[in-house]
Amino acid sequence: MSEEHHIDYSQLLSQLLDEKGELNDTITSFLYHLFPEELFVRAMSLLDSNDMFIYVYDKLQTESKHIKSISTEPDEPEAREALSGTSNEMLKTSEAAESRPDAGANSKDIAHLLYEGREAPLNRLIVKPETPESPPICVDLDHWFCSCEEYNCQFRSNLLNVPEQPAGPVDLEESSLYSRAIVEHELKSQAPHSDRFAQVKSLHLQFQRYFRHELAMCPHLLAFAILLQTSSAILMYFTHTNATVYLITVQNLDEWLKLHLNVIQ
Image 1 (cartoon, rainbow, N blue to C red):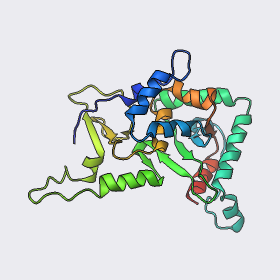
Image 2 (cartoon, rainbow, N blue to C red; image 1 turned 180 degrees about the vertical axis):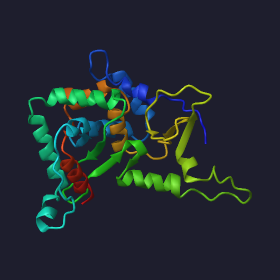
Image 3 (cartoon, rainbow, N blue to C red; image 1 turned 90 degrees about the vertical axis):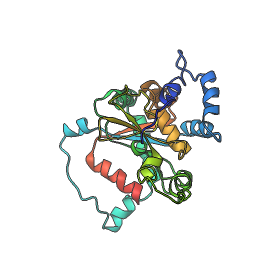
């Protein structure tokens, strides 16, 4: 289903910072009214919470080193214990990253790579759980997904549990989950959009695809979209200048796999 994508959210959110590199109060006030139910306020609070982690796999650095392969299956009790406590592992990793002398320079390089690189590096977006018993919240911007209950409730209500179609001929394409969730922008007859907000990955170069974020969006998705779907200046503000979001590089394949095992435990 093709539909014009009118508002350039990426451009609007990119103006969060003024010429002095500080938060723009006028734009902030406008964005507050643009998103429903204080969603923008909740996202901004999350950005200031020190609970957001962006893990980036530094493939080029890894390929230049010899990586010893180990088993990632937590069969033994010691292994299971080592892979437990995801939030503690995240905090230890972030503290170690912050203590490195080159942490600031490295974060600038990674921020530039996330926006300017020909191919975005692998990354994992995680929000620290509210309680030790809760699982971490995982966000996937490429597919506009969040593991939190708020997002899943909206997805079920607005995209899965839709009213039945009236009797008569039914257009299968129009009634599909894909057509309800995705807006397509065809590039054959139109110029590509600069907007990256809620844009989902597509293997077809003739289309840009956007998730209908008005149907399913939580503060976690909005906060990470502000970081990674606007500009490198915004990302650097929260990860370096304000230093309330952790941008952490993982240069060891074993550690990258261990991170994923921690998340699914």
